[in-house]
Image 1: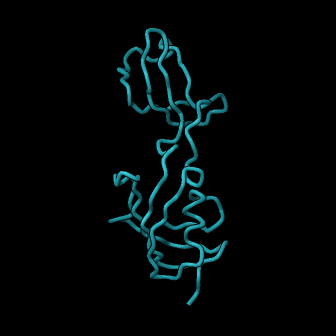
Image 2 (image 1 turned 120 degrees about the vertical axis):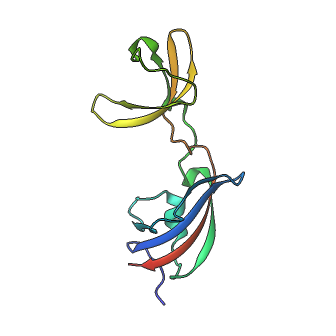
Length: 142
């Protein structure tokens, strides 16, 4: 039976959770996730975790921060002038907002704090700094 190797396109079902057991994503009730191994389409630890699996195989991946979304970066936290926030937008701590950079790329930020003149925005990936656990099942090698 064929085993997964770099360059293969695979389909997997998965259940992703944090170390405290909280689910953050799952393919349950959806089509399996399809990606090409080694193409950078998924996080590094997930990508390498499917290598050598055969269709029908199941396993649990314990992915360290460095092979997931990386550590939280202080460079991704910024103060933004409250005066630049639309007056009709009622911001609150924990709220997700979308911003764009000068090149027009859109990215998501989370309101981390609200001060008198500035709001603190966190542009880190929501799972940055978290080791992740995935229960996966290789459905097929396409």
